[in-house]
Image 1 (cartoon, one colour):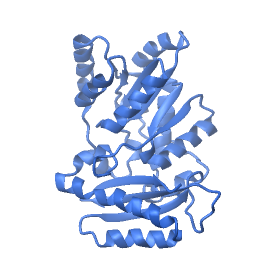
Image 2 (cartoon, rainbow, N blue to C red):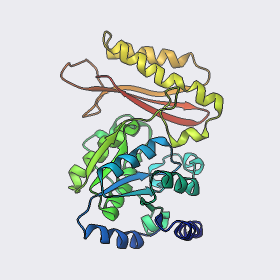
Image 3 (cartoon, rainbow, N blue to C red):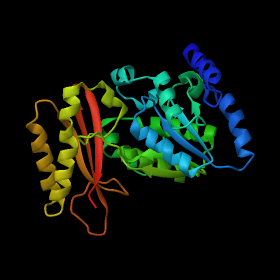
Length: 299
């Protein structure tokens, strides 16, 4: 908490327009003055280690709303791997500077785990109508309960008009839409395009853990998805999956965890193509214990 307090003081002195809040009470008091004016609030939830993809969400929110809030919180309950949580990059001071480069008027919420969970770091149980059982749900037990718990809590604190999420985490995006529907939350969910490195690698906070060679060679992920999309036009889902698995079996650097072609709405795996459905490919790959995910629309 001392680190957060130091940053709050520093940035309020050096730039009075940059507001970093560390408690729900602080942020709620500030937001009440906005809600009383009936102006719209855009919200970008993040776990920090911001990159250009995050900044694009902020820019879209600023374009659409009178005010924008960004949260920076590494949520422990959505990590099923303790080592991944431990190594997840935490770069709050750098993040604040990047946010300032977009706008001085963005409100930053950087709470502690204690503040968000009140001493009980346990996720609630959710039923997302089966969306949580596909892809990521199969390999990361309890992950989406953690996501649902913290996103619902953040929505209750910020009370945004619109909330912005990147399509790289497409399954998460669909689950948050389901969360809003089932919990009857008054917020519009906006999905935004994936931002990529020059070699096609989807931008992710985890990319900071890759060395230069790994980041360069990681172009195999997007390039394989592009080829898979091309093949899907003439081949079956099973044949496309075999192609992807064969491609990664030849790599000494990358280990394929899963590749799925699924219905965009239900996220159920495609067994036989239906021209009336929209399909999307999902992939998860490990490189030197760093887990990278990506997705691409097949329509």
